[in-house]
Structure formats: structure tokens, C-alpha cells
Image 1 (cartoon, rainbow, N blue to C red):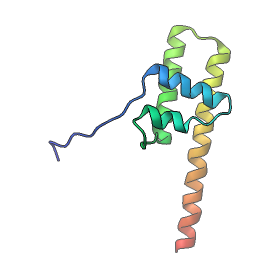
Image 2 (cartoon, rainbow, N blue to C red; image 1 turned 120 degrees about the horizontal axis):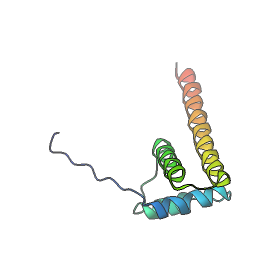
Image 3 (cartoon, helix red, strand yellow; image 1 turned 120 degrees about the vertical axis):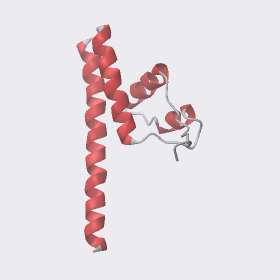
Image 4 (cartoon, one colour; image 1 turned 180 degrees about the horizontal axis):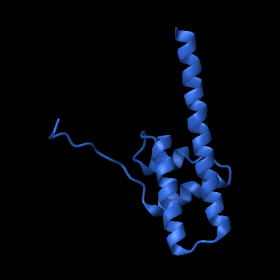
Length: 98
């Protein structure tokens, strides 16, 4: 396995900002994310959350306004809620499997 190389698709900053803006406007960005990642691939919640945190670091360094930073933070909160929701659904499903 040491010679195994995994292909990793990464969104550039512009693509991330466009997707985050669409999400902030209440639009679904899943189609755009899939297109940006060469169709068919999806972004996991953990990768999306990491991207939001990276973007927040960048925004803090560049002096973005409070409103913009707050909007991106809210996206992170929404992603965490979705992660927790999915974890709870898995736990419930596991209970019924027993």
C-alpha cells in the first residue's frame, strides 16, 4: 500500500466562495460542488467543515467584515448540525438493527 496514490479533488478558493455564497442564500450548491469536483464526487461534511474553518482563518487574516465572517460561521454551524443529525440517525438505525 505504500505505493498507492489517491486522487484528491480540491476546490479552489473562488469555487469555495461561490458555493458558500449559494448556501448562504439558501440555494443548493451540491450540483456546483459536484461539477467543480469532476462530476459524481461529493464533498463530505468533514471536508466542507474543514474548508469553512480554513476560509474563516483566511477571512480573519484579510480583515473581512464582521457580517461576512458571521455568515461563514453560520455555515459551519449548519454543517455541524447536519453531521449531528446524521450521527443520531445512524444511532437510531443501529438500535433497530439489534
